[in-house]
Image 1 (cartoon, rainbow, N blue to C red):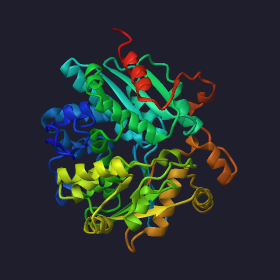
Image 2 (tube, rainbow, N blue to C red):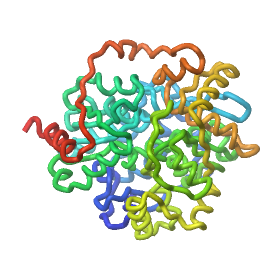
Image 3 (cartoon, rainbow, N blue to C red):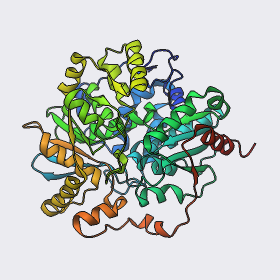
Image 4 (spheres, one colour):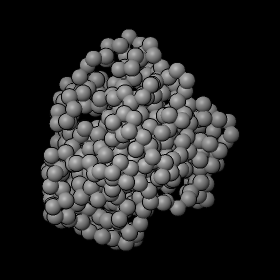
Length: 465
């Protein structure tokens, strides 16, 4: 399997090179040259497999010859062995035709663990084979940072720097990052919002001397390895509900578009998904686009679902590239205009083609709390604010006759203040995090200034030289 940039000016790479590179040299995002396809018989053969085995088989075509299949299997088994549920990604029925796909049974209680626990092993394997070392830089709106740190902390060939927007994550999310004491971990609280953090990381990748000097790599969903590792759980859920004979829909609470893109990729690979419901909070660039072809920038507002407080959905570039017929020049031109003007120009026929697959949905904070309360009252199920938005989207937008898989993206204990407002009590943290509020935090605060942040990252990466 070879990978190409959405903007067409970077050399093609194999999976291992894409893993280490993250972002393409031309500023684009790597995509597989073609989508592997599973036949109905091959899909049926995946039924009933342990999750780690299913994940290895689904990812194998993306990995290609870069990693032996036996090594990939072993890494998947190690990655998911510590999850708190034996099914790893269990399905829970909450209403007629509505199922929560629980993606929060990993060590940091969020869906990011599904990809990043495996990514930690992948990085270690590839770097050991090459005798290399990398400095990973990532931006987080709440969950990616803690999952990435958990996966990379203490690894001998990796340093990791995570930028989070100061004061804009939940306390649990922040402490999961800042209480890790491993010497290869650095946390930066940036005075800005998530988009500022994301722009800072992209600027580091665009700084070729810095990127080369510290062997910069990425764990955000700009890294296709992240997307590849998220695709298997949509296979697992659809198979559990009767695929390939039965079509399903998915509802995904999303800000950066990576999780729903993974579901769309599963469809390209043969999973019968009939509709993708994109669920947004008040930061609704995706739902506005799907409703009226309005992909325009607006200030990011704080909400009860902070992991979705995002103004620019980076992974949308990948979908746009596909719906533009993989025209890299058109993709690059569209993204350059978007960056220059703050508004994306998408041709009417392209927008309508996207609309045939995707439906947008937006929910306010007040309605989010009402959905948390309703789900608790009617199903005795405690949904975190992000999952609640997905559940409301499923109720409002479900196609007739199709079961809807709702991505339950985080454990409710990560958002105790919002849960208490909705149902009157605070959910307890799982035992392995029970002392989180007593642990000492360690992070640095930085202004939204590239040169200062670059200096912090460079000094950290070179601290042992």
